[in-house]
Length: 116
Length: 111
Image (cartoon, rainbow over all chains, first blue to last red; front, side, top):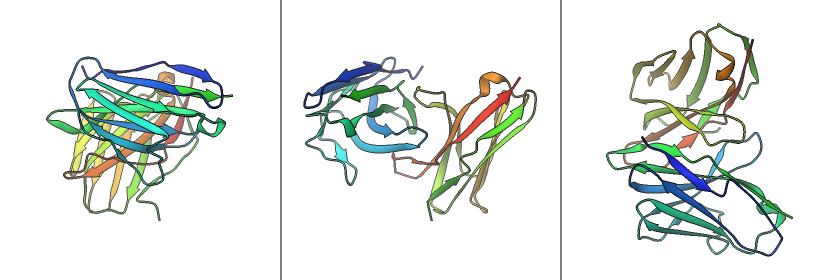
C-alpha cells in the first residue's frame, strides 16, 4: 500500500510554455500532498503543501503565480509550471500522507523537467 | 548551523559489511524520525519510521534514535549492491506535517 504515481516522468518544453505535472495516490486517500524540487546531488526543497479543496501553502521564496498547485480530490494534485524558463529545469517530486499517519510521507517517482 | 546535519559521503563499503549512517539535529522538539532511500533519478522510498527514542528493526535495517544526544542512526546488515543509493534522514515535531531533511549520504556497496 501507499503508492504514489507521477505523470509525466520526463518532459521537455520550450521556454515560455506551461507544463502540468500530476501526482496521484493510487491506493489511499491523501490528506495532504507536498511538492518538492530537487537539484542534482542535493536534498529535497519543499515548495508547497496542499490539502484537498484548499489553497496551497507555499514556502518562502516560491512564486505561487509561477508554480500553480491544484488539489482537486483526495487522490490527485497537480503542479503547473507557468511560463517556464531554463532555470525551472529540475526534478520535481510529490509526496502524500494518509489519514492516521500524517508523519509518514510517501513519495512519487519524480518528474524530470527540462526547459530549452 | 543547519537543523539537521548528515555526512554527504560518498561512503563505499564491501558487500556483506555493516553500514552505519547517521544524522544529528539541533531541534529538541523533533519526535518523529524517518529514513528514506533514494535511487538515482527516482523518488525517495520510506525505509524506517521511528517515534521518540529507541530502536526499531526491519529485516536487515535497524534504526536507532537517541534524543538525549540528538543523534539518529540507520544500520544496514549484510549489505548488498542493491543497497547502493542515497540515504536521507528526515524528522519533524508533533503536529507538524512538514519534514526537515538531511542532505543525504551517498552509499556504494562494492561487490
